[in-house]
Image 1: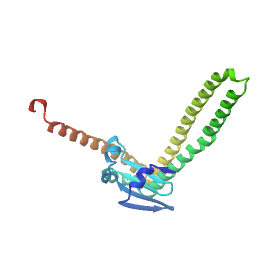
Image 2: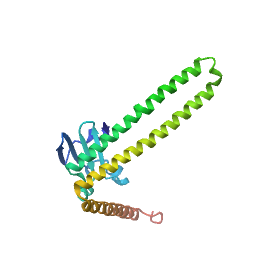
Image 3: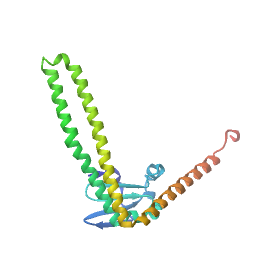
Image 4: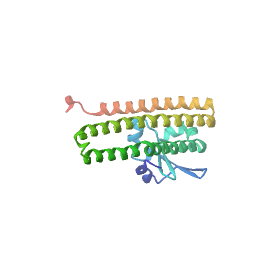
Amino acid sequence: MKLQYGIYKQLNNPKEVQTTDNKTVEIHSMNETSYLAKFAGKGQFAVWTSDSKNFKLLIEDGYYNAMKELYGKRANLVWIKFYEKADKIRFGLMYKMVFPLIGVAMLLAVLFSTLKALQPYQTYGLIGILAIVLITNMAQTSIMRKKIEQVRSESIKDIKMIVGENKFKELLENQQKYYDSYFKFEEVKEEATTEEKPSDENK
């Protein structure tokens, strides 16, 4: 499973390296990359990347300091297993639903275009095939989301067990405080920049 592989290849200066259960996690400072505005600016302070074997966590400095217990060795192993399970769910559904359907759709398309008895109904057949493909794709997406959300909920429960219920609640509070503080600071910076720009009257 390759995860944000383009970013993974660019991260070469880890601040910390964790090794557990034959998995290596490099922790990289988002503040030292060009990805700070792209991710942190949208409220995403932690980004997981992988080359399908090892993992690199790109995380904003202040957020890491505030939420460090959520990214310890044991907790990170839970996150890794979550991404691996989510990947298996995606590919499992692709092989079970999407690929067979594509094969059937192609076969039907050929039959409607080559068999004389079906050729008069070719347009209706193609419309029916497209409708079935669309419905199946929607069903596959819905099933995938539900299964991944279930795995996510199980992973969060595992992390609660690791850090403790009270500590987990405290971390959630810290997370909200950090979000509020970070974006309040961004707003202040924006206002200050706006005030520094000359108005039309002063030009």
